[in-house]
Image 1 (tube, rainbow, N blue to C red):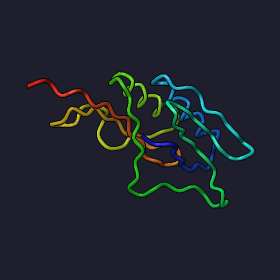
Image 2 (tube, rainbow, N blue to C red):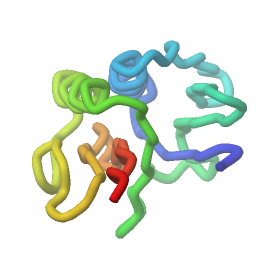
Image 3 (cartoon, rainbow, N blue to C red):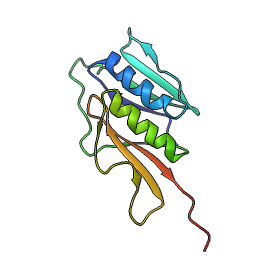
Image 4 (cartoon, one colour):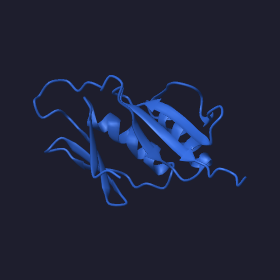
Length: 129
């Protein structure tokens, strides 16, 4: 659905530890660190997720109200994603991982070590009536 997403970081080594862990939890590969350009790159299914130090030299800040959602195929992988994130410097936010009341969406939310808000989502098929 998207080509690429960039989020800012003030510490790429710390970001790599965090993102490598959450992507590995659902079968992703470690990111490639381009220290010279200040970028950390993850590729999957033709899209890229990148973490960078701001080009203008100012500190990285988070988007107020922004959330990046990752579609994950299994609820067990979402639980592993969330646990890996918390274990590697992220913080849980919103409700605990699980089904949302009245919906078929299984969600988990984290903030990465720089404060960017992330969501893992699995939408189960609705039962036939």
